[in-house]
Amino acid sequence: MKKIIEICLESVESVVAAQKGGADRVELCSDLFEGGLTPTLGTFTVARKLASTIKINVMIRPRGGDFCYSDEEFEVMKEDLLSLKNAGADGIVFGILTPEGDIDEERTRALVALASPLPVTFHRAFDMSKDAFKSLETLIDLGVKRILTSGLEPTVMEGLPLLTELVKKADDRIIIMPGCGISERNFKYLDEKINAKEYHVFLPKEISSKMEYRPSHIYMGGLLRQPEFSIFHTDNERVSNIVKEI
Image (cartoon, rainbow, N blue to C red; front, side, top):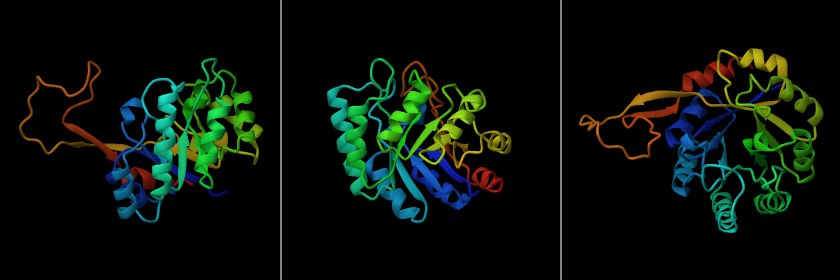
């Protein structure tokens, strides 16, 4: 069975690298430090021009934190979805929950309709829902194409038992796409256990900033800081190594 490899990334350079490495698809985000937010229209447009053969799904997430959104945030999600859809996105990625930890059916249905005919991935908001199998059936009924999940655990390795059950339960009704903590070292093992059709992986490399002058006492972020003078892009060789395993 042909396995689909999707790369999680946040830059134009990374999209180009994923295509070069042989990935089937990317999930284009901004700010992976926050778990992935909506990319800018400019980022998507340039990525589409420079990587014309790989499928680009786009994240629709207006902020970090939880997945229970205000009316204003939901309006932003709708506008971003339509802008990126009209710009040529191949698929839409989002997740919305109720305060009680269930799938927000009304809002999910509305976004699925706006995205049509593009396929929808419900992202790891699924892992923050309180009942995996109830959420699974709800998303099937709503017409979602796939679920990105680590099995309601921090990583795929920890969520392995539930992921195996979810793949069997889903059958051909929806795609279960394991993601979080998959690497070249464990991909073959996890695939043999889960036997999913698609996998979601993050394969970066660290690139030193071009800055020569580096003041060490100034930070652009808050108290929880990323390195100011390191940049992370997808490593096309790491992508190739994963692709060779399938």
